[in-house]
Length: 321
Image (cartoon, rainbow, N blue to C red; front, side, top):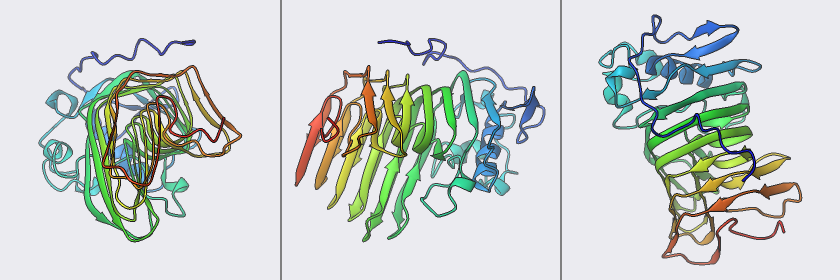
């Protein structure tokens, strides 16, 4: 493969004791906002969701963080983060129950761009470990449910690893809305570059809800130099089931998947119209779509599927060829 993925991003990266002097307030160095603790990451997520989209700004991860390690918190037992949606001990709430609240809004609401990330997120070759997100028993007949580290991304996310994540969601609908689950982002209208994900990512769509699940982003515009090691499971019901190792569907006028690979198992269960693959589940009739320098080594498992079944190592359908 050309342009090998940055070797500074490694699943073996350790974590060190954070020394953040202003937890919950991002330090600024040379015009860049720096995340120095779990508290900073939580406050940043809340800030984006509440209307600071960081357009034309760079946010950088200062060091690797582990949600399960007290070393990544200034005070893992703090109870003063109710403002950010955590009413109780912070570490306990981030590692159980609903877990981490995604960066930016997690629906397709009309004002989503103003409440989603629009800047540059520089992972700085660091890793976020043991990210836990669980959204169960969600009922909505209109809006999507979008789950990932980022809910919606309109900017650029680069040089970031997510190691040993556990991300899951369940949506019940009598409409045509979709549950969309990804590791880096649920939906990316911008660019994701030089990122990886490991762990487990799963979603379940009930009744007529659609399902879109993937390792890097459920739906994406530009994804390059990325790889997925996570097990990906999409469980459909009476509607469409898109499942892919890198991404499962598309967003935007320019759609590029370049220099990516998947080694995680990709599993599709009970969908009625199924598009499943190691790299990109659904391509559609997109003349502006490019997939290049990609490969898949992950197993693809199909179970209890009905209706249409499109499955492949690289793509799940072939309309784009």
